[in-house]
Amino acid sequence: MQSARVATRILPIKHSPPLQSPVRSMATVSSNSSSLVHPSTTSPTPIRLAVLHQSLTPPLLNGVCKPAKPGGYKDSGSDIAHVLSQSSNIDVLTPVDRPDPTNQDHWTFPEDAGGLLDAVKKGATHVWANVHTYTSHPLQTSGVLEDVQQALMVVGQPPRLADWADDKAWFGEYLRSRAAELDLAPPRAKLVSRQRNVTAQLEQAIAQLGMPLIVKPPRGRGSSGVARCDTQGELRKHVDTLLNDGESVIVEEYMPGEEGTVAVLPPRPGDPHSEYRALPFVQRFDHTDGVMAYSGKTPVSVNSRALTLQEIQADQNYGDIMRQCEVVAGLLQATAPIRIDVRRAADRRFRVFDVNLKPNYTGPGRPGRDDQMNLMGLGAASLGWSYSRFLHECLARARPLAQLRRMGGHFNGTVGERVAEKKVSTADGFAEDLHLDDAPLAGMRAFA
Image 1 (spheres, rainbow, N blue to C red):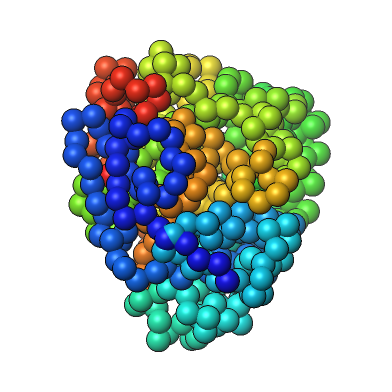
Image 2: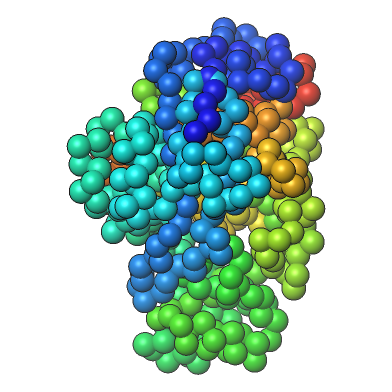
């Protein structure tokens, strides 16, 4: 077990360089704001953190199983645990007494009931659910947590939320139904079912959406199963392949323009001034056949970069999609960071085409991991945040397990409506909302 002390003082980025120690942490404030102290950082009681890895196969959802991640996210879980073990006031709990930074099997606990019980017996006050959750997940259902659910803090999404958001067909249709009301711009799409005449459905999709088309499963991980189809023959072949493993497939308009991703942090619990906040836009490139390929082996720093403040200001569409992503996070009532993939359509506006409730958290710190910064971390780095600072921001948004268990049983978009009312999409308004100051890239958002 290793321990360190978490920050107790929050300083504005403008008055300090990028974080080199955990003393400066947890908030970016505008140049005319005073420093803030969040109650969760002032407690003298150390945080005792256990990080989970995937050890269970996700259940079927509408006949489709979400592919498991090779290694079960032990790589990113070990990165999280190792880096936070260097911080003060945090005891990182591990399944072995002397974890080796080079061994990803030493740092995380399995997500099953046995792993959770082990973490609780070791004294965990916080659990980082670095896994995909769902209604039947042990975090939601396990009786071993009944006695601690009020006090146990969790970094993660409400387990029942995934049953809504992981169904990409349902959630995409929901966004389209709210598009005019909330000024959203989701892509046009059609759900093709194997229970009906597939040929007729594809002919209708081509008539409505044109060619080429993107075909993807309604539930997936990364770009698994996603393909651009340029001809009717390619379309039918790929649709048939996906329908062999599931009940339906999504056929979506192809957007030929720039691709990017936007991470959104949720509000801090108990802070009435904290809101859903987008990190800076991260541009993606080096596509294969019009699709951003994911192998898990190529560092995202090779095919992605965060835009500068000047680049974001030069095109109001960047500010507009960052606002849209905040609205989407509010619609979901996300309680942990999410990452939203977007692409520019022919009209120059960006479209939200994928929502990732469990983004990748890999980062530098362990030996041989210097090039492993995740996409959210690339955006955070534009604010001057280190990987450690980013992880502290995520940890500060942990919520009691009992609260997460109550959430997500029914879909409620009112939070997203409130977020939409507060946001702006014009270039001038966006610049105001950024709380700009002289420091380059600092204060891009007023995190509170």
